Amino acid sequence: MKKTILILNFILLLALIALDVAYIVVGTLLIKSLASAIFVIIGIINFIFALKCKASIKFPILMLFGLIFAMLGDILLEINFIVGAILFAVGHIFFFISYCALSKFTLKDLLYGIIIFIPSVLFMTLAPIFEYDGIVMEIVCVVYALIISLMVGKSISLFIAQKSMLTLIILLGSICFFLSDLMLLLNVFAHLPVVGIICLVLYYPAEFMLAFSIFLHSNVIKDAR
Image (cartoon, rainbow, N blue to C red; front, side, top):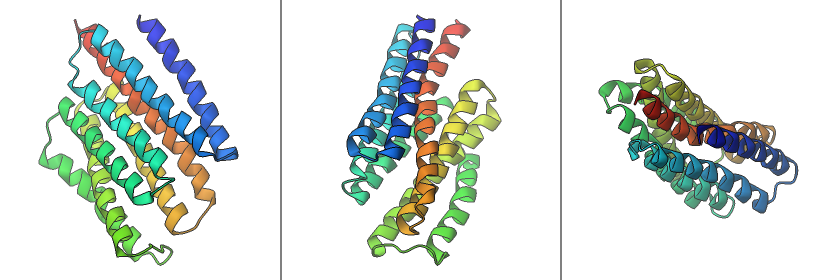
């Protein structure tokens, strides 16, 4: 079954890349929705693998919920930016808690998150290139930055404490997600259209890596038995 799941992950990754390219070229909500659905399907497939392996489902189920909220945020971002950002933030909270399921939250995790958040929020609020549509939008972006900074900080701490393919994929996925959101911020509020492409190039691989981490976690548990 392991080989079958790996093959399905690879096939769906190719489909995700194809849809990513199609969205960059065409830019329709339908293509974006299909791409988002793909990484959730990958998560579901890997979650089923986790059940078959009789692994602990705490990390997989939390990660899957994170992917689902990311999908909803990705789609609704095009309709209402604030609603989309809130759904993404909820997704990041699930990602963060899933990381904590692998290793308990410590002050060191908080420190890494703060180190990421402080320069990020200073850049967002003080750089003259940003033009927010009112104070509410700016507050939403700052709160979102705090949540994703804590998520990335935890992934860094997790990798330092437990160096493995699983924690490396989680770290890379988290960093790519953060950089993708930074590009989105520059695209939407600094009106730099070129960075929109970079955002998409980083975003879907980030989601795939997080979805694939469910497989890696289950495989580690299975091999340990």
